[in-house]
Image (cartoon, rainbow, N blue to C red; front, side, top):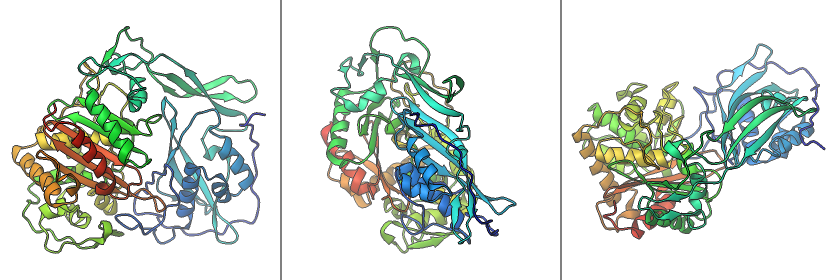
Length: 544
């Protein structure tokens, strides 16, 4: 039996009562639901603004959360056709080798007939190949009992999924290239498991010679390919011979051991790179197989992003480290923001706000920056959002202009729609303490099309001092007993109401910058901190 042989269902029942739905959110409501649950108020660094009539939007987000987490019965129960919905959701990815999807909801819109539409972006990680990204919409209709349900139809799963067409994955396997580290030492996936997904995508000039494949839309009856929805892998042929990388076998071994020892089985990723030239020394992922979170992940960077927003404020002379910027427990900007563990520091200086990672203090300074200024600083000085050619597939960050004051407040603390990963945040740290952006690289001879401006020396001095104080007197004390002049910044980034926050830590010592994220790690110091500490303790502090 064809698992994709669905039949359409016509929804009946009483005519829905029209509800006047004002904006479900003040701006775009973005929810990355890799494995989380419904999106509701009350958890994380700040509370959610559900708006005056949130029922339809909350139902849409709950449906996406259940779908992403594989809770088919729960997701289907939120629709007008539970039986068909459960069968379709359960079998949609059969044969497509898709792991945990990320489904990102946008702002809801009301139709003239009282229906509500919630657009969303689906990011479907295809094992060993990459991410299949597409956009669709959830139609919702109010039921006779006043509850909202997703008005089920095949096209909401994917706009081109139908009774006559389905999707098929075709792979073209290729042999991974032989890979060496920077000294010519052979690197194998057996010895360094985290490098498996990376090595398969390495190749001449960053083009890659790893696994290739495509997702096709095909006719259900004949199997004829109607169109290609996504392609993965390069089509170039690499010259024979080992690929020499910038990796260092000692750093790579230490990074993998640190994750294995301290990630506690959680999804996690780490990148270490040289500050003076951007060459990547280690790329590690937990689990070691599958998705390369370290280079291609999309995460809210949380308070590690205060390096960038802090730079924007310092560049503009909008604040100085010794200026008093109060740090209350709460601050309301469309919704209530709060500090992790409800901490407060009355009369704190900006330096103290940075070292203690005070959300409310940074948010209170938002009016001193133009709406697009943090994104401009990220691109101009840190290269974030420009196109990077690393030598393997990578996600290079996104810092969109905030849609409203609430989103601007969130972006000041690395939330909202700001997206990064360990590669980006290791690079941000390296740029902050050196003043100069260097495009990260995994292989030699890759193209660099980025254009950046060096940070002023005075700003670099201030950033280095605050990063150091975060280790000696702030939230990164977990690194304080290690040798060397280590600077660091912790971060906590919320995901959804039934998932613990992601934990972040970035650090620099000598000529090396490191960034680590632990999914559902709760706090940066408590989860990513031990990983980075273990790594730095295992390698000499003068390593280059």
